[in-house]
Image (cartoon, rainbow, N blue to C red; front, top):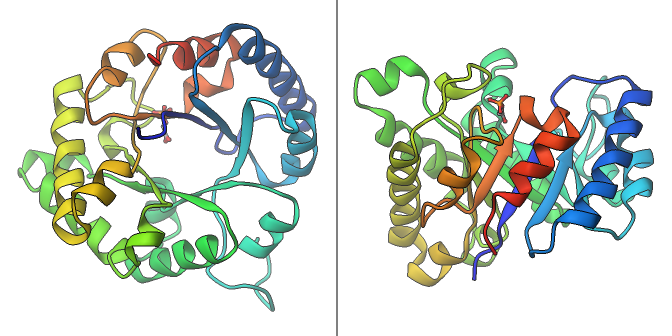
Length: 254
Ligand code: PGA
């Protein structure tokens, strides 16, 4: 069975006090209301990670960073490395979010290196892919997503790619309130899984969790999560509210 995962991507939101309050609320709600094996992750701003990691402890919620450097250490002012995240026991890191690709010009090669260094430090990368609207309108979305995965992940061994979580996030659905339909999500997830199977074989492809992201909310999560190749969600805006995020987690069937 593939791991079912609901990950919140807080992006650059919340003060420290707000972040602690949200984490405390979530811990209580998830503990009391969620009885499945769904992995629940909160990917928070860097400065809050040690405190929030301590707050969630070994409970049902795991923590993740939203990015890491492709370098291990050294003169890279402003960067945060995978060994640093490892040293504060952070299990997950988002790699290649479309906002990083778009605003910080992260390249395929750089994302390959970030994935490598995350894995080398025992972090689980949540590797994001997804097409902008113009690419979908030109019917090139499947090609682009295959290319994104191939360029940044296909150098990995089968053992290593099996540790990666993939998140398909169509750029036109992120923060827009416009979700991909369950059919559009399922179609792309199937394309991704087939591509993985061609390179690594069915067994490896079938073991990799593929999350959908892009305007997931408490109202649409159940339909998206019911798709056979959708193994959970990467949730932005709706992860900032404890009630809504918990309801999204509860939308995942055991
Ligand atoms: P959204 O963001 O849920 O606000 O659309 C998703 C993401 O960017 O991970």
